[in-house]
Length: 90
Image 1 (cartoon, rainbow, N blue to C red):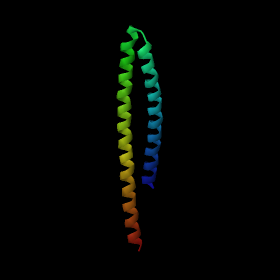
Image 2 (tube, helix red, strand yellow):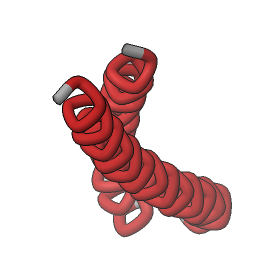
Image 3 (cartoon, one colour):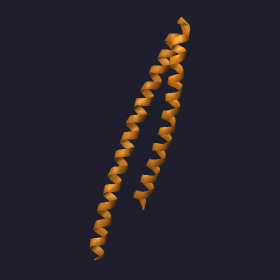
Image 4 (cartoon, rainbow, N blue to C red):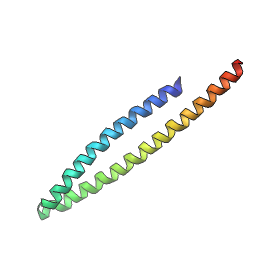
């Protein structure tokens, strides 16, 4: 039962990360247009912001991958425990 709860929690976090990822993509895409058409003084600030958001996006992707792997591992463990339980019941 705790495995199901953990899996559901991780799925929820993955969904939140996906939403955050899409928001960042929209901001970055909007930021690129501003960088191209912006003035010289704001370019450096916008490029720094873009770089920071790209770094954050990379970290979010990494966390999402880790969470996905954790879900796979938990599902495998749950299947093993289910097999063990069925064999003990028989």
